[in-house]
Image 1 (cartoon, helix red, strand yellow):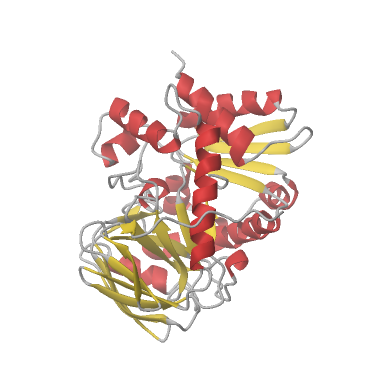
Image 2 (cartoon, rainbow, N blue to C red):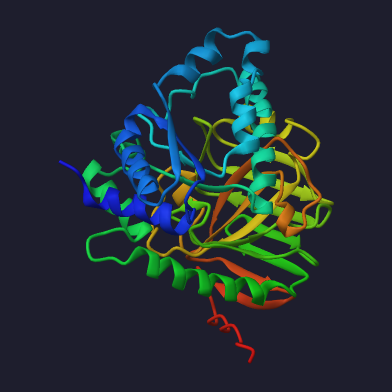
Length: 377
């Protein structure tokens, strides 16, 4: 039986996130478990006059590569992938999988080698996305594996996913995300003049210099669901400590209770109660991996719980997140890295954020509504 919410999600991505146009070449990537959403996206693209095609991958191939491939094979990128990175007009990544823990026990150094190669290609895609040459959106097809991580039944998890996307029965998702875009855009404009943020909470007292950097709204164009405002900090302007109570599942491996201490913009001490070796191996990815490439406010209050999936967790209403590694060119970053790793700081109960010494955020919310944009006649 077809789920009409999947059809609605596909129309939202094709019509709002990507704004597919006639004649555009459009690729849909995903594991075989995500075929129902891939088919719905293909049909939505056909109706809009685009030229869609799919790359559907059997589950388990990555585990085989990490177990048996040589270093040269791990670093290999097929020419067709390089061509796609340079020539596609639009792209959707579907992140549904049958096993979210399949890479838990792989060798961390081999995984780092594979990720370094992967992120060089991803960074090139982001250059095209930032310039407007490539429309891209990543989303998730809900599976039993993701539901289990979130400690829900599959039915409950599907309801959660579609609630976060506003693709439930009776929802008008495009109208919702257009309104959200206006709200997030107004919040980003308010933060433009801030020189320094001070983030405080349990185990956290972090100062982040953001002077001269552009704040950007995440309003459903590149992720679905979405709901954050973010920027890239000044590279030498982060100092203090931050604690992440939520675990982080990064590329199939889990790290828990991460504590970081920064001096002059870089991590000088890192510890975790689980996955500490993996944490430190990621910090050694390259010279930019110890520097923050992102600081962001999570503002999707439909996402009200931790699910072990960064697509949702970084947008939890009332949290902030930072990312180690590469920043965003459109925000003004100068930090380059093959790593971009988001970590979630829960501020919903005790957290406070000060902008240039003024309290702007308390217990998970901004203390004032954003000013609407002024229309000029």
